[in-house]
Length: 66
Image (cartoon, rainbow, N blue to C red; front, side, top):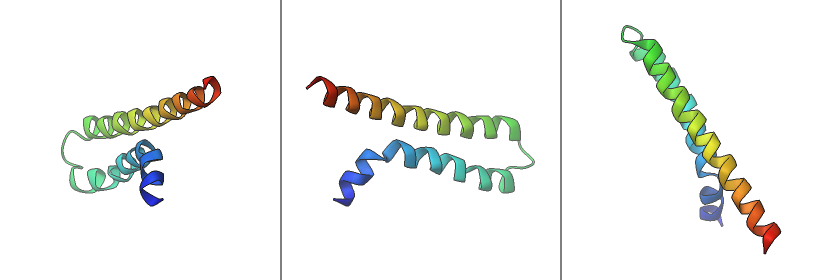
């Protein structure tokens, strides 16, 4: 049952992981190229959330069509 929930929410969880990963990026990489690091984290989060929406849309279309 839990594995099913993880599989259904894997992209949402990945998106939140990248958002949470921004905190250590700000703390430990503040003297590096911070803008590039934050944009990379944002891109990963946005991709993960987008993949979650696509998965949900595909699942809904499969239910509607069959």
